[in-house]
Image (cartoon, rainbow, N blue to C red; front, side):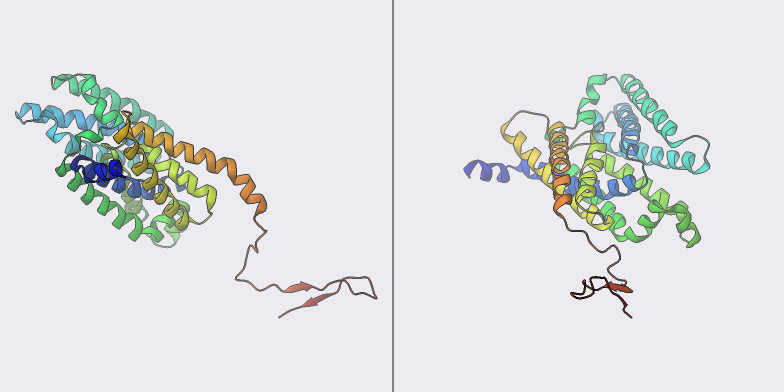
Amino acid sequence: MSGLWEMVTDPFMQRALVAALLVGVSAPVVGTYLVQRRLALLGDGIGHVALTGVALGWLVGAAMGLVPDDVLAVPGAVVAAVAGSVLIEVVRRRGRTSGDLALAILFYGGIAGGVLLIGLAGGSSGSLMAYLFGSISTVTMSDVWVTVILCGLILLVGIGLRPVLFSVSHDEEFAIASGLPVWALNMAVAVLAALTVTVAMRVVGLLLVSALMIVPVAIGQLVTHSFRRTMLVGCVVGVVVCVTGLSITYWHNVSPGALIVVLAIGVYAVVAALHPLLTRRRPAADPHPDIPDDVAVAPVSAGRGRKEEECTP
């Protein structure tokens, strides 16, 4: 207990735990929409573009003589991620190329641009490692406030507009027929994904952020069939693995981002293994409980040996 109290009262761990908690609850919210739209790898593409933004912010900071050089890395990542998400949505919307091809272009262009710009800024590719795989030890109080603001925005839009965002993500043609502003809502999902990537950058890194957005949602889909409950389960799993993984790294010198993702995948493996057993024991439910049955089958009569059907109103 003394070790746990020491961890909780450590100012560094307090900042890290707040960041991990916020990332754990917000990433699956956006991930639920991405999974529904079959764009599970969008976070990876945006993460690679954000790497170019990190290097660009580094270059601008070095040119302005700011200390430290990477003081503009996070703002640069936000700008680049939002621009990249909007670009891929425009490309997907206009149909000039397929979604997977556009993501591939973002993958390679983002990595190449980041490495090129960091070299021009006087750094090396090693300078980007903290952003690629996360570095919770570098979280400052200003980073915590930025995380609070961005996560608040993500949760406000992601949960507040859940009905219309679900409609667009589930059936875009139906949303258009319903008169919803589909283009604006699609852009909102893309921008939310970009903000989530930059928020989770410090905790799990740009290369692993997509896993934190998708794996908890995949776990939620195994245990429930409701969109709202899937999002809720994903948020709970995200918080648990983030806080647990970060707590373990307080006593063991391992990468928090990698450990968080491994824990999430481990939980998915356990739930997936138990899912057939739970499904087998679950009784068959009425697929339409809100509609009264119009035919009731009476038990076999003792004397006549046949089934009688009677209509019910």
